[in-house]
Amino acid sequence: VNISDDNSMVTAQLPTGETIEILLHGATILSWKDAAGDEKLWLSENAKLDGSGPARGGIPLVFPVFGTNSGHAVEKLPQHGFARNSRWEFLGKSTSEGATAGVKLDFGLSSQNLDEATRKLWPYAFGLIYSVTLDRESLNTTLVITNDGEVPFEFQTLLHTYFKVNDIESVQVTGLEDSPYVDKLDGLKVKNQSGTVTFTGETDRVYTPAKGPSHPIVISDGGKPRFRIVRDNLDDAVVFNPWVDKANSLADFTPKDGWRKMVCVEPGSVSKWQTLEKGDAFEAAQTIYLE
Ligand code: TA6
Image 1 (cartoon, protein in one colour):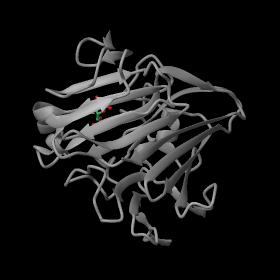
Image 2: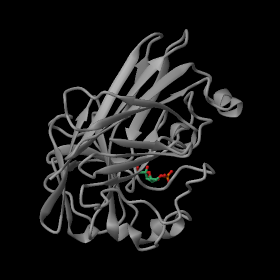
Image 3: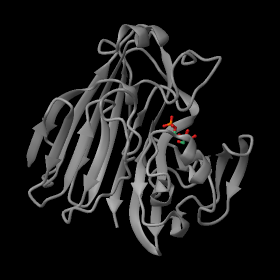
């Protein structure tokens, strides 16, 4: 396995050719390619890669709040929290469980690493260890959150994955049948998903899949299954596509018709607050299998 770290980005390549690129700003996975060099993630052409803001696309890491939330200890934090907009440390390669030919890279962020201003906005002592495991046919991202302080804190967390697709109008998402969802575009009304999810306009929904985290969510494109996602300890999954107007409103979303080429399915624990007692840890993961 080839690993390089130029102090801005860590890249890894398996002997069989698969690669990943992780931006140390936000520990955001920017690219995941299969052995043939086919890119699996969508990244905006003008995504911020210089640390001046969260990168648009790839797999941004949302912690300690999803969205914004007034009237809560997180209320002073920017949208989706600080993890995706902070400088993480590359902790190195760790042997991934089992003798897979893959590679597991670890990244860390703690309250000590945070700049003073951010620490003031959410004054809790915490530690994050983010592990990225690349195998021939899958990518796993695992987050371990520890409460290193003396008082409990509440948090939400989510893996904001931007999947690359050929044509959103042919995308189908299954595995969410009979599941409740909050429709963020319709007054946060709670609705029920009867069949397959398809896309005909801006879509922004927080699902709590009825069959639980181990039941796969499958993204198909042009009638072919592309990605199979299983979750661990993440009870929710956000399904998002900005469509024309929202894409136009996001300065760092290019090309402007890029919404046709992406879909977000975002494993998370966001429909309620998790409370982490002092000294406790919370572990959560997504595994994305290539179909
Ligand atoms: O995950 C969906 C969402 O919450 C949408 O509402 C949209 O805001 C998206 O995240 C992107 O948020 P961002 O802060 O990255 O522009």
